[in-house]
Image (cartoon, rainbow, N blue to C red; front, side, top):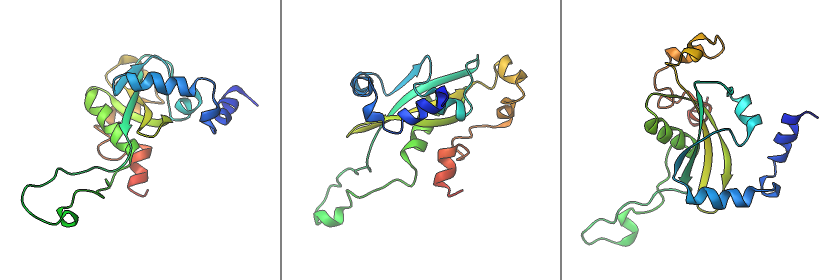
Length: 167
């Protein structure tokens, strides 16, 4: 078994990993969107197109789990009819995370993302971003197709977006 296969097998049961719980404790204290030096799951990042070269960055993002709750309207009505709860978004959490990261880094294109952790309140995803204006990316024949893509995450062109579009 090679290195990437053993890493992939270890991430099938993440709660048994050595520093998983300590990482979650540390990530809770960090900001919701934080750039990281290298991917936490190198096997998953590489399979989604990440290369350790200039023009690629990885961002870890946190999003709250669950549906949303609307603000309570003023005026008299039955609580059941006020329509406060049971609103589920039509997008998945992973896709919403990718969109938030794309808004934070407007000059980058989202390549893909993968989950790195979750607890009772939040989920963490690592999002792979590519700089389409970087000369190294422009020269690389394997990734320069992204030069023609504009805001692909908002059009549902990432793998999480395609899942929500039932493709």
